Length: 229
Figure 1 (cartoon, one colour):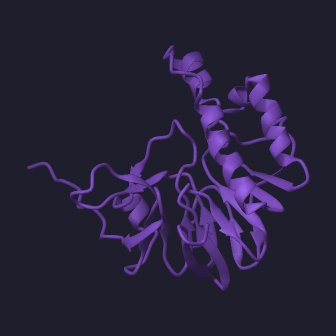
Figure 2: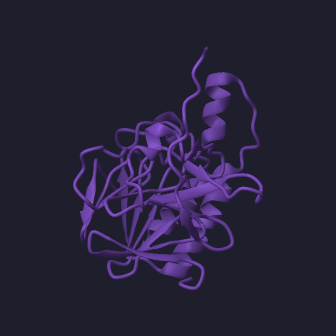
């Protein structure tokens, strides 16, 4: 895992950005994933009448199962928007529900509240608005004036290299904070150079691209907003 991960230290805490989009804190035996958006196909059908193949939760759990089997964490932190909404949480397929509970067996599981799934769900674990471990504080949405060591999600950042195809989910990192990529299968993304996202970071920020290996590249300046004549 270490050979394909990107190693960094944030506010005195060592972390590994994994190629899958998960974050591992080896010293604390903690695995963090953000924006799973499980049961999104159910919510899209219920609210918009759009019929998507209902396999995204299973695909997401497949990847999460693999990361857990490899990292063997004592604690898993789901960093908000784990379900596409609370009704989607309640409508989770029984097989997926059982699998999710099995993943929690023998370890601490923390659900951080997101804007899509604020409130308690019925899938075990404990619900928190935020969680502090070592020098890091985990919350769903970044706060501009947060103390150093903030880890958040919400924005689903994406970035790519010119000439290398489409943008991919990425971590964004500087000396103060980390924004996680979306881990879920049916999740879109926001260009990491958009001012609302790029403005959270200093000039020496990195984008850590996910894929076969975690690849760190300098994060360019914010995109200029076009002006109408």
